[in-house]
Length: 499
Ligand code: HEM
Image (cartoon, rainbow, N blue to C red; front, side, top):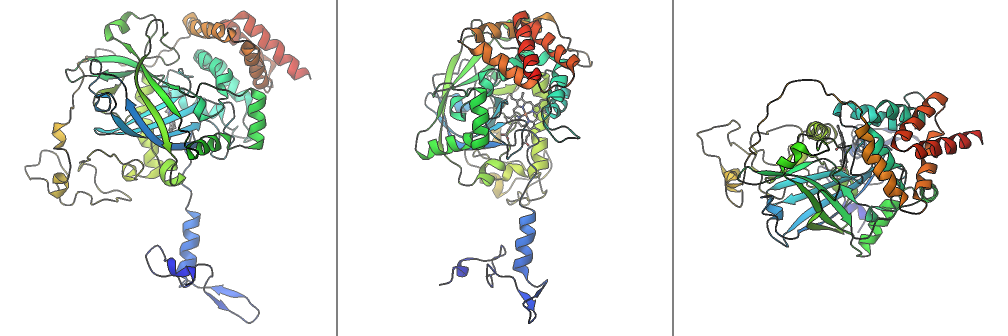
């Protein structure tokens, strides 16, 4: 039997032949295309439309499926269902990415690595959209697009540009803590398997009585943290730009399943009021001596995606996907992100992106107030009322929901009251902004050779800055962290330029 017997057009009609066009031929062997050649037209038209917009940040990635297992009893701090019982398992999707470079770029480049994790809990999807760094470059959300553009390509040369990168950071020095992490060994992790991930932001664990705790989440690799040196990362970027994808894909194929222990730092709201650090400023961490880690679970990856585009490219993660027992804090950057991600998903995937199988909740969904729209895939709730407070009874779509009515879910709001004034964001840089980076510089110093590597990594980047004035502003920035650091970075950079 010819292989063509297996194939049809997308409409189900058999192919005349899957590998030839239908043409009006002449004797010389030429041929005119015919509009009636549906299979040629459909084949070409679909090919031109295969690409969807790349994520504007975090385009290059790897993903896999797995499970989260709750460990211990968290009922004192949250009513979240996925943490309710020791040993309870929740299916997970993880996507780990670099931030600035495009989808085809080398994944060992020095960059922050993003961590998009979707937990398909029995009370809806909870997304943890984290980074492998516990701090961030900015604390005023309006700076996010500017910051990312300065890390990407120059608008004229279309080249990554050290002048833009350092000009942005000199002008916005609150990112100094994150810069130090980025230019440390942690900026070039050996693989997804060997990196930690952090919420960075403060979130809240909430309970049914309306009380809450502030939390920060830490996911620590069970494989141990391992990093490349700059030289190794650069060499591998040339030899195998997809090194990190290959590493994790092949490990999972070999059934060497990577896992992470999940911890929270827990702070009572009363402690937050007088804490020495602003807990809504993601350029700061909470020292573990003040708020120790408490283990709440373990996440293991155990299945590669069946299809990258369907499972990973079409995945849409958002910090706004939260379940009862878990909620956002008043960190202004987090608040802005609650809008930015679903907005990006609507642009990238369309208004019904929640119906794409990789995004679809495994919990019952009854949301008849979101109707119609492009690419509606389900029954669109038939004739159920599409307005609130209807006296009409919903029909079969409602009854099909397993596990009771939506009202039975543990919905609640926290007892938080706000008094404030409408004002612009004020973010003055103070000496306090350099305290934690200075402490990090000391920690880096405990590991033999690490400070020297940070200096060399910084010099490698800053030496791309053409203006001597800007370079000296960068040295001044690092001198505020530690005078010796600033001086050494200056010497190493200027020596690199002279050669
Ligand atoms: C104002 C601040 C921020 C804004 C406006 C922002 C916006 C975005 C946007 C538009 C995307 C692409 C989403 C998509 O196309 O599906 C994205 C991806 C991502 N962001 Fe952010 N972001 C911000 C800060 C952060 C922070 C602080 C973190 C980590 C703590 C983070 C982690 C990620 C990750 C991991 C992804 C990739 C998600 C995936 O795998 O699809 N972002 N961000």
